[in-house]
Image 1 (cartoon, rainbow, N blue to C red):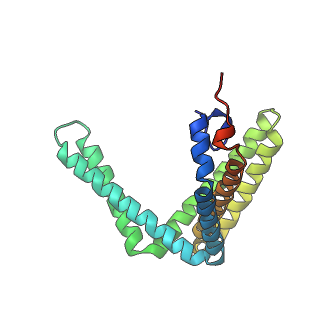
Image 2 (image 1 turned 30 degrees about the vertical axis):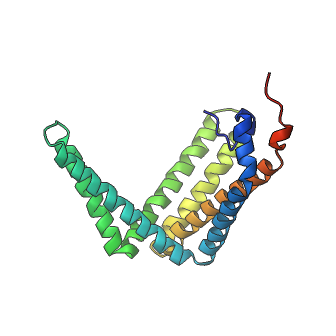
Length: 198
């Protein structure tokens, strides 16, 4: 399925008209994300703490829901697996909420290892597989590997800034994307000037 935000040509005339009328909301949301991203970069420690607490609550709620679901459907064969999975997720959420600094430290190490291993694998795949994009693939792998080495080598001190910085960068890119989308939508022809497709 094609994402409408990537290809406005697949939308119907009434959808395009609705988007054009509401382009300002997309721009405002993008601006909000951009401001939050900049604030996150300026206060990476606070952004890390808030992100970790969000993850903790998400784990706690999801784990509790899985435990309740397992108890309600006690008679089926996957009961113990669901119950155990839910309890582990719930305990992980509680651990993160009660000890957010240690939670951030663990999550940071996981992120560092993922960047490191993923980067090395991308470099290897880029060298082994010949395609027109192998240069970008190798470049992406090198950057990921460098980031992974930085995060792991500076651990546990890197846990103060890594998660908040990554979340802030993601917010910045999402904000830029929404603002550019809103400006593209604003340039669409007005509904009255649109001719129905034959």
